Image (cartoon, rainbow, N blue to C red; front, side, top):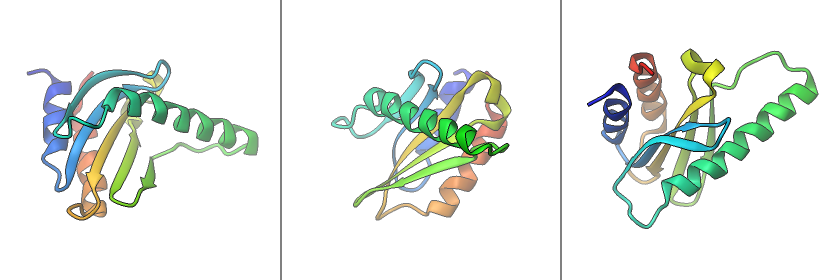
Length: 123
């Protein structure tokens, strides 16, 4: 298994995880996906969340904010969607996209685990 496969597998071990993708937000293409929910299209979700990141970056530029995005949380009725921009790969425009079942997830622990996974990811 390569580093991406291992990172996705480890992310799926996070309590409540139902899907994960490693995404290039410059193109919207996934570099890998893994999920247990076959009715949820991670490819479509990854492409859509690419637009969320691009919009936030444009807004930050318009405001003159000289900062970086650590993560973006989207809270739905039954799910958390956690988008973590990879700080170690910022120039490459990569993010981890994690879908969590809200009833089973510990959001603080999920954020902590994604940071740890990122630190071990070698692309």
